Length: 139
Ligand code: TYD
Image (tube, rainbow, N blue to C red):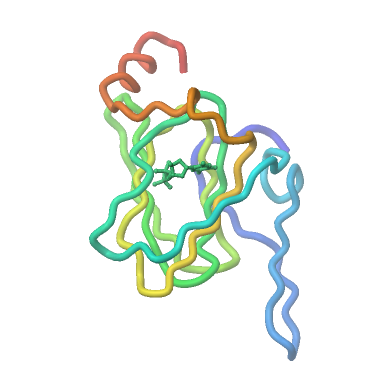
């Protein structure tokens, strides 16, 4: 699968009388191999999470239960808001985009698939620094 820009993805579902089964295969349904998963629950509508960019890691975020929103900024003045509100859709986030996750509904479980193991050094947590790196062409 080719590398892509920020976009919503729809995953294959196998539904039958027993319920739904959603399939997410690394390198097939998402454009990277999955090295790490983590999930976020217990956040509420007041909380803003994320607030960082990553130098190397790509993510796919799926609200497997409940809802949340993701605000994405490219550091060049463009931003977009995506609603994560269906368990068979997700958002693909390439490296070097700023993301805020917020407006978590009660019972929200936000599943995050990542292309890299955790490395605090590749997280950019200062927005001005992020803009500087983007304008310096290092993104
Ligand atoms: P944080 O980056 O604040 O989460 P979010 O961006 O989703 O709001 O991470 C919270 C804490 O968990 C922080 O101490 C770093 C740690 N952490 C790991 O150890 N491994 C991981 O894969 C992630 C995502 C976070």
